[in-house]
Amino acid sequence: QVELVESGGGSVQAGGSLRLSCVASGDTYSVACMTWFHQVPGKEREGVAVIYTDDGTTHYTDSVKGRFTISHDNAQNTLYLQMNSLKPEDTGMYYCAASPYDMDYELALLRDRYKTWGQGTQVTVSS
Image 1 (cartoon, one colour):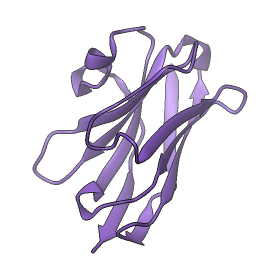
Image 2 (cartoon, one colour):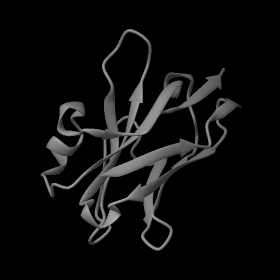
Image 3 (cartoon, one colour):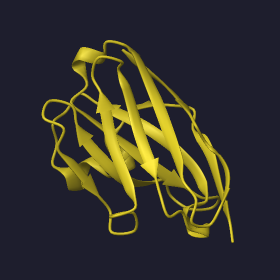
């Protein structure tokens, strides 16, 4: 079993930056891919960035490509999301998720593919 704890959220002005962290504990050897999700009230949780822990391959949705960078420190069992050039529409809760399955990235962006989640961290971007 894997447990995840996010941190690093906060309030910034548009154009600013934040770095989110997600510390994994437990059976971390079993994790094949990890994804950051974004959720706003009344909407579905959407995957924005995926990383595969074996080779570091990453994938991003078009909404964050070129602005966000996902990375993983295997030694520290920590997932990161560097968020630059933030926009008001980036506001919301951010969750990390982990899966033992090495699935195609299009599936890895889907909420229902994950059973292991962190508690989330709030990001607020003001215009």
